[in-house]
Image (cartoon, rainbow, N blue to C red; front, side):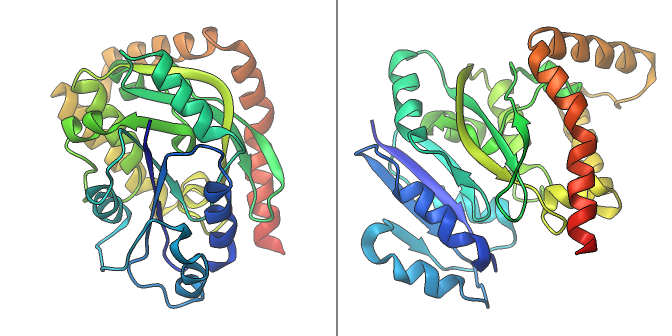
Length: 278
């Protein structure tokens, strides 16, 4: 089974080499690797060139943001299954082989998501992160989560969903999962640790956790998706009751994930504050 993986990079030279190496070290024999860099001004281009033809395709055309960069990358992909890894994240050893096996054993499944770890900018483990059972209703009511770095999908599912919404600047991955669910795609949770998600003060996810304008834009995107999918605003008694039911379903289906999250949310915020003080 051929798997195509895209990495998007923009001025991430301090993490990029590790990310690329984590992909090239995978032990799956049929892996197509595509790197997209729309115009970095740091050492990123030199790092990419240093890997030579070990990277299958390098796309250097400008884009208007991460979602468009990913669409550019997947336009060149020829695999049966797609995945993507940001330049500051990592795949764990054996991840691609586990994903290929999961798709081969579950031929009626369109999306496979595993678990992983949140790490800080220095590579220290912060906490475990679980993917959770996913459907459109759960996601719209904040009761479902897929670890993006550990999520892979059939090429046909990507095309069926119409690719990434290029106007989404905060949660383009979540909107793709939602579009796939609304298009009838089937999701499967693989109980394996597959990837590391790096969260730090200047990363988009770190800025959303810390609040301010990035968090406001994220909430705007989430509310827009809710209105698009349901024709209603995410407010009122009906929404609050559905939100509460979604939380109960999320945590009752994985009590260990609930306990881990309660213990570690404060630790994540503290790690971000500590990094900012250094």
